[in-house]
Image (cartoon, rainbow, N blue to C red):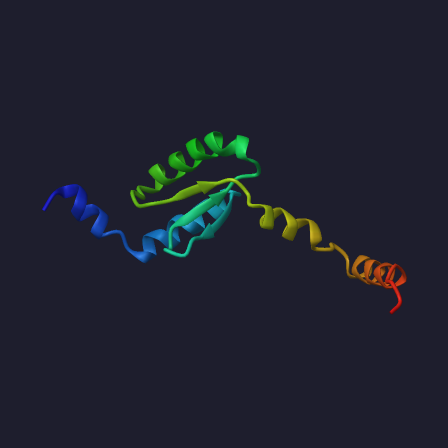
Length: 105
């Protein structure tokens, strides 16, 4: 068996979780994809190459040689961030405003 194949087979979930935690501790926005691969979410599509270099350096220092991902934000990601009110009072105000603007039946 090739050494490279053996290394890839020995990558465990613990290694992926350790990489996930290290990237998160570095201040990056990270998620685990459906296949369990740590994926860094960039602030914008233009930042991807810069973040990729940073992620590679962090994971190299960690001696992690498994899969990882870097992606731009999705439209759904941005909508979720914009819709979350910071203050409960703001949520109550926006709810009352939407009731005032409702069309009566």
